[in-house]
Length: 156
Image (cartoon, rainbow, N blue to C red):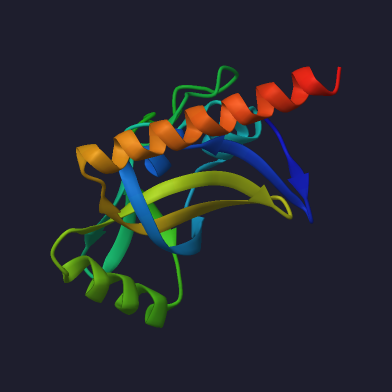
């Protein structure tokens, strides 16, 4: 699944994030990666499925993101689910830390992409959806699918 737009090549998306959470505000952060990690990212061997952003020592870290070991690596290959530091301006970090201090807010990774050759993570401040909100999302998606199907049949 690659998509190019203005030097942006999407590597991985977290589809469950939009379903599980109400996404409020988006941020873009750089990632501190080792050499074998960036090679695995460029090979699209990344999963954001169970990952989350966690504050530690006034910094933000990407936790539980799976970047597969580089198959041509050596004995100093990286650990696939190690925590990775996010690179943001201090005022952005402070804003996010204040928001995470509020009850019910969390930071959820939505996309990992390459922008001008550098790995970037898009994440959002989010609030968890209730069960009825998830049902509404499913119903809206199903009705949209039916409308598109009917339009396709009509214009065949």
